[in-house]
Image (cartoon, rainbow, N blue to C red; front, side, top):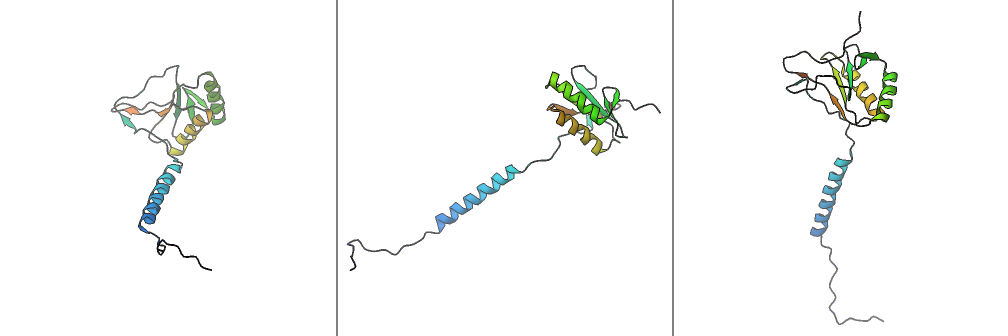
Length: 147
């Protein structure tokens, strides 16, 4: 037995326009979120020439130099990469807010600078900058070993 309703029966209809709007909104949202989820593997550096630079060595900062051969200097003393990491970790335990300045000349390989920066980051320092030479003066680098 079929029961009839006094309300007129309408055929069911699916509205597509609001569905398309929702789908475009979701697509745009997922695209924006996915762009912010990518891990940026970049290194912020200053250009080699600058008007105002930090050129004097102070005891309350760590000065690292890299020469064109890839040798690393802590202040003015040549040091190996494992010893550098040990000393940096020791300095980090004493004062984690100490700024670290890395300097090198124009002929220094990029890979050597990145290795030094990586050692500083592994030690835990967050205040890291690259020294630049002022316009019209000699670059500030650690002395190369005697030949």
